[in-house]
Amino acid sequence: MRSWSSKFLVTCSVAMLAPAAASAQSGEPQLVVAVPSLPTPKNVDTAGGQTGVLGIQIAQMIAADLRSSGSIVTIDPDKLRRYTPTEATAPLYRNWTNSNAGALVQGYVQARDDGRITVVCYLYDLKTHREMGRAGFAVGAEDWRRAAHRCSDTFHKAITGLPGHFDSRITYVAETGDRTQPVKRLAIVNWDGTNHNFLTQGEGTVISPRLSPDGQRIAYVSFTGGMPHVRVMDLDGSNDRPLLAGPPAMSFAPVFSPDGRRIAFSIAAEGNTDIYVVNAGGGFPQRLTNTPGIDTAPSFSPDGRSIAFESDRGGSQQIYVMNSDGSGQRRISFAGGSHASPAWSPKGDLIAFSRWNGASLNIGVIAPDGSGERMITNGWQDERPSWAPDGEFIVFQRTQQGSGQTWPYTVSLNGSEPKRLAIPQAGSDPDWSGASQ
Amino acid sequence: MKIMIALFLFAAAAPAAAQPIPPPGAPGYPMVQGPVLAIPVLEADFRAKAGSEIVRFARDSYVLTPQSQATLTAQAQWLIQHPFVRASIEGHADGRQTREYSLALGERRAAAVPHCDASAPQRLLPGIASTAASPAGSSPVAAAPHPPPGAACSSPGPAPPPALTLSCSSRFAPI
Image 1 (tube, one colour):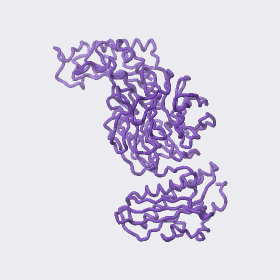
Image 2 (tube, each protein chain N blue to C red):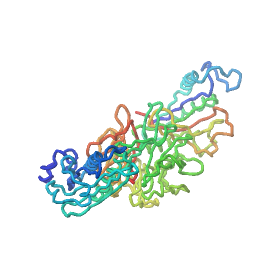
Image 3 (cartoon, helix red, strand yellow):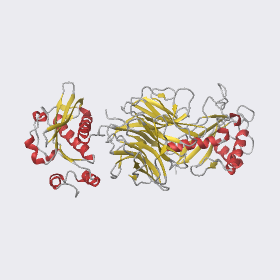
Image 4 (tube, rainbow over the protein chains, first blue to last red):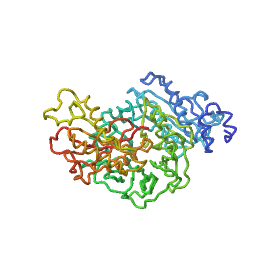
């Protein structure tokens, strides 16, 4: 709090207390964004409610999205003046000078003849009087949240240079049943807990879902037929097929390359596990590792040129990095304990991992050159980190001591308190890698 | 941390554990009741004669100790004598291991059991086929069956006898 300028404190301390406290610790520069309600030319009843009400709700959601990012502070709609739809594209800058904000969100909500709504949003720089970004969508009225999240993503990118995660989704394994009769279903949910859907119906055990970068396909491990093997399907459940043709092999730990064209994974046979890569459409896999140890959990760098993975070739599980053709394999984790499940951040500057220190598993990050290792969580069993598209948040799986129940949690890089993902039941193997489009 | 042998009787009820149980279709084979009653009886007999249904490993290890090998041998002999019993070999890993490592370690442990070794099918127990098994029991679950089908130790023939199956798998065990 002390690192704020006094001007910010006076005008927005109440509204931004909680999110700002976390970001103030990280010491990042903050932009104050005013988010007044979006006006509507005509208040119309829609399937999502009255357009006038939607304008308030969309503004509130944009404000909530932006302030959940560590580097943005917001002023919420109920503290701001209202404006007319015609102002949306031509802001009256002088009317906002007293808000003490650095940027302004405007826009409008309009009912369409086809029952959908048009949502248009703009971000203006109140100092230079320039437009910083804009987005517009025609969506089903009940999908207004999606439009709000995509406005937030556009503004997040305009402000920070990085895509937001507000319209992104998390796929995971929904866990129901009891320990003797577990039911595991692939599920997908918006990061904020809305729009929850099952992708499989629990007829067979499934683990390790991974979204493709375009968010349209999912790679996962199925036990159907008895042999755990990687499969790929479209998000709607169609085109479900094994990744590998030919005689079944035990394959697992799939992950898409950043361009979505390849899938890296592991094959285990005769007591040896190695990493392979294959075209996402199938074909003959190329072997990348050949040590007698367990080489698994591959994760591509965002440029697709490198792969982080875990190996116990040196005695204990540690993080290694190699070129994506398998050359140049080198260990990067040396901090003691064992390190597993590397996940390369979308910014490319960090690799998240799970570290076993002899008593607990926790999430940490390390630079790809092995420097700067630090821990993010302090739980009993936190594992399987996966990055949000903005590289600011991580989703991971937390197991409760005693009950053994697992839930996905999200945490920001600055080490804020992890938040349980708002899903209807326990879950494991969360993956946040899908893009927002 | 262990390998566990689980038994599944195929459509039979055991009259008593003391007597050898004839194969299905043979005189004396109990046909009246379902399999539910028989499994605990068989399990008790298996434990009594083989010593244990569990073989333990050290953390992160897949090396069979001499004691483990002795137990496995006794287990195998019992299985040979009861060819109509379906058994699965499950390699369990520590529930506090990460998922991928547990899968790989389970496969490594299952592969350490000689009659699960796909590369040496001649070492399979006579009349016993090794197939993949779906994971049984608790969550989180991960089966690592061995060997790959197509090898000599997959199910024999188009219509295999209903029970001669030794399957190898692995899974996590909850803490």
